[in-house]
Length: 87
Image (tube, rainbow, N blue to C red; front, side, top):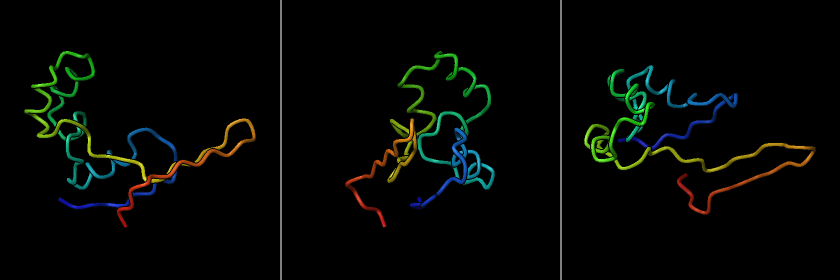
């Protein structure tokens, strides 16, 4: 396991997950990119139990967390930071 600092250049959903998957470094617990396509489709259709998801992904949740988030909305800049420091 490796702790990675990833800074996406755009706000596209799943960007970090897709790029890590493309080099065979999936995020622990990822129910979409770290599994077989059939399982991912069933997961997206809410046809996978939590028990089966944990059994397949080996984790109770996706191990992807934001340390810092910043965006602007209606001319107001919002900044959120984690109290936990990894680096």
